Image (cartoon, rainbow, N blue to C red; front, side, top):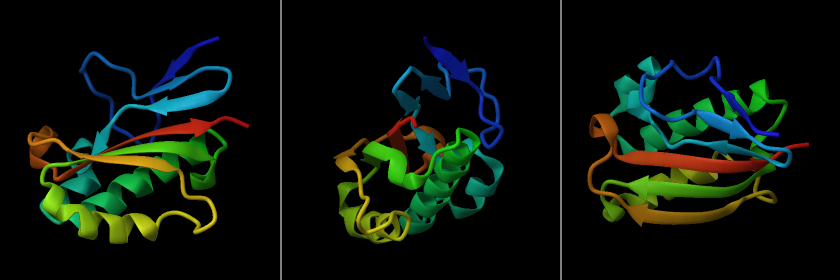
Length: 127
């Protein structure tokens, strides 16, 4: 069974994608950037703050699904500039339990939505 949901924590978009897709085993999140939600607009341009803001929203969506950050199995991080890796990484470390960090890929993507510096996509195992 596949369900497509619009989380309360993320404003609705008219773009042609689902914010979260659920199957029997996993929750797949579309990429999120700070420009996607009102409180994120205040931190645009600060890679660490954007990373924290996006991961906080992801945490809220996980809570809506009855999940936690430790249920995330895979993360994809897109940086507008790979030179920002260390700042992103430091903020990222603060958002995950040290014994439950997911697999992660980090790549450079020059043009992110809304002049964001960080976009994060996750896949979490459902309970």
